[in-house]
Image 1 (tube, rainbow, N blue to C red):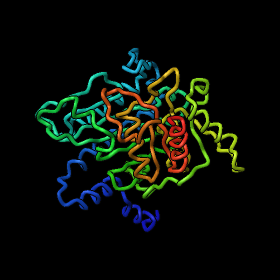
Image 2: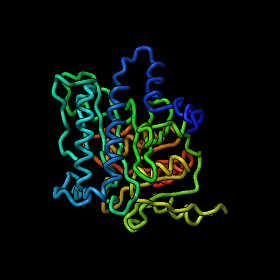
Image 3: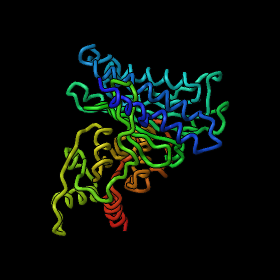
Length: 339
């Protein structure tokens, strides 16, 4: 046994160590966010384990319920939701939770309340479980002013107020990407240690990318700026090479690739879904926060995504996010149309 080689494995930047380091940079921090994040990390480890065993454990079959988004719920959705609700409530640091799976917000009982609100999608892309495509958990964290008198209004904040956001992708490896407002870092789960290790420090999205990611099956219903942009990606007029199309259909996987390789991910409004398809609080906001922290942009077709003020917890919005220059081009096309 090579003890020397093993020794270096104890000097790893784990996610716990990273978050504690971040905490020590804020002298006024009391460790509440650190504790909350450690509970989210535990939830992610649990779901990663369940996803890996899904086929074997017969968790794949439908749970027989339909969630508020009218998606057929898989048993794994239900399980993941329960895992995160319990993990977040037991942290003692949350006062209200918003989940994609629950029609109403969950208000934590007063004795267990803390100062944070967490909005999350416990298992995004769960219809892809059967075919082994990457799926993930998305979360965004806000601070609530008065935890004793928290209302739904306190949850409906613009995305720019978030204190932290991230996602955990369950794929060929289990990767957790996190921002606490000071850049973006990626951690990979080492199954032998049961720890998330820093593998992608200070992620920066390329300024311009060679990939566009969109469901082209909806093309006949697109508005003019979206159609023009995709046409330019395929048939550039300036002599540059066409962009490659990559679309997985699982938001976590598509955004993860966009973050690492650059390019643009778009889910525009169309005639069928005039308000877009993706939910503001637990899909659009966390991913937009990460994208901006990594040097990219996020746009709704009308405004910066993080400036949007939602009016309902399951509100939807169109979204264009990715490399700064690519999103700038989309903004230009919408500005032209508005003239």
